[in-house]
Length: 204
Image (tube, rainbow, N blue to C red; front, side, top):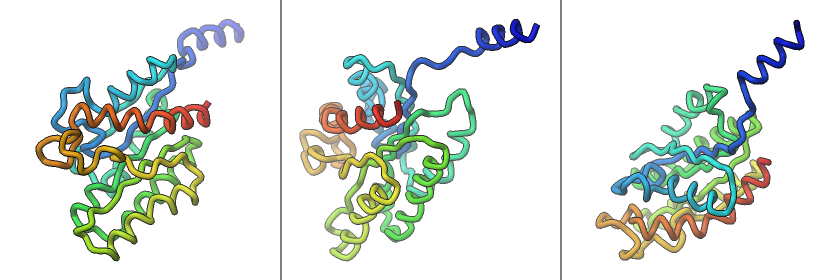
């Protein structure tokens, strides 16, 4: 009887085959100004599947979100065991710089996010952001130092600048000069892909 119940439970709740990656971020992740199929998460999932990875990339981007916002919603994003990610890509901080928020607070928020994910045993890829030069040299130095410091402290996979190869290139951005267009997203995915595969290897 006990054996029958165990077999029944196993059949009712099969192990999840695919690897779930949560992209926790702001409008750069959400796909601001783009059709869904051209969003970062859709393009990344497509690129990984094309290389034979059985993955699902969840769009956890909220336009306008700051590191504080990402931290505030992290608990409920991890609350459902059935939807629990195997790995997380963190892309936050761009709006912190645009609002001139204290880099020390950005550090504290990201530190809390990485610690929470670490406590859950979830591997992380931290994608860095950079402050625009018009924020002043002191601000830029303090903000840009946040990401490598946290990556080392938490031993996560690190990609120094999410917009590498795309920032300040008009042909790869929408008219606002901030958000990548479809071509820009393709560049981001191509450059980030080796780091995501490193993340998958670490999570497997």
